[in-house]
Length: 338
Image (tube, rainbow, N blue to C red; front, side, top):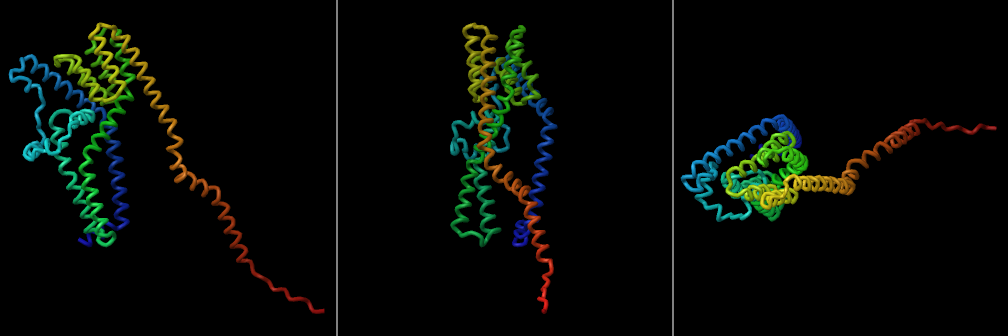
């Protein structure tokens, strides 16, 4: 065990492991960019398959009640979650909404979430205990080791929530970056005479290369408009899944347009303008925050290099002059005798 710990803590091995991880993440990032088209096709196909299934079940009259329209939990952790009753033990009233905002729908992600909320504290706690009590035996006191272990245990409990929030935040940014353009396309399609379902499906196909998440949400909206008893529920579901004020305003405008019979093109034109202004204001806000954010990186990375470039030649020249002065022989001149 000591040999293994020494091998792990060897600086050369740590550097090699870090370089290997960086290479791995680089390859994964490049692979994801190359596979984005296949991901879009898979997501759109899954949404289309689900829409056809829901239509078929609704046309059959849903003989088994409303149960036939629900997803089935095929998670491998379902048995453990039900046996330990984790949904009540670790109850989170917002878990379904948070998972939907992150792109995970149905009961399967819920079971997976509760399983990892149970397992991650023990996993991170065991890793921290192994690092503190076996690898770094004499570096810290017992109290510090226990504090780090308990901190890792607590961090493991909140790790699934942090992951879901980060996933939802990235998904929301991807959707909002392409949403104003999708509104313009939707406005053109509606004014050309298309129905709202056909226009949404057309926009989803066109916006797929720009934002896979937005294309998926629009396709899901079309599917919900086809089988939900009220169209308002479909628009409310889109607003809840995205959780952005711009999309909420658009959904509210579309609900009111269908309820009161107001022209949909006028509402979409106003909403498209507001979302473009919202995207522009967000970009201006980021640009205004750049000087403050770049202060520390400039001090840490830019100024030392600048001082080295300016003062380096001077220091080298002074060193050369000192070497020449030290190498010059000293000649003792005796006074001439008269």
